[in-house]
Length: 168
Image 1 (cartoon, helix red, strand yellow):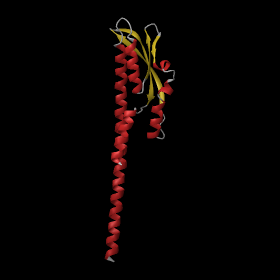
Image 2: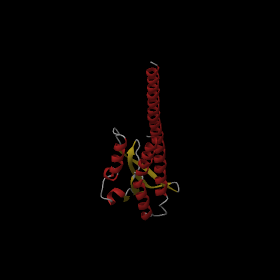
Image 3: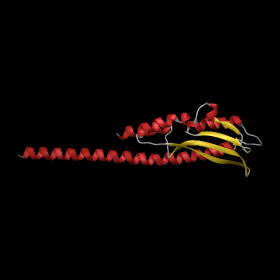
Image 4: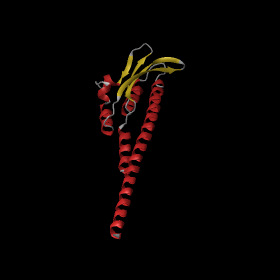
């Protein structure tokens, strides 16, 4: 009789400990995900503002198209597709036309990556139009397309995957 009771108690404690550990891991996973998503959103806003600033600094009585192209390449790696128009509205740089692709095609890796992380992820590409200012006058317009509400770059994906591996 004592053996059965002791065995039943041990089994109950084991199951309780197992369920507790699993519950903590699930909760920890969700907390890490939600905090990381907030971090990614903030980082994307900072990157967006940095792109606007970088492009604005490429004007000194004329546009430095080579530097705009460099900024465009960096922006694409961060998940932003840009085009720049001068003050007359003429497009002076458009990475999508240079690559002969649409923004959707250029950002397709992001969509695939996000769907692998979140099965129900529905991202939408939006395009913002931002005024470019130099010495208190508008020198052009930046058109910048990206996924909303958030997305992971390849570096973000690697980081969150490694965190999930450690947790589980």
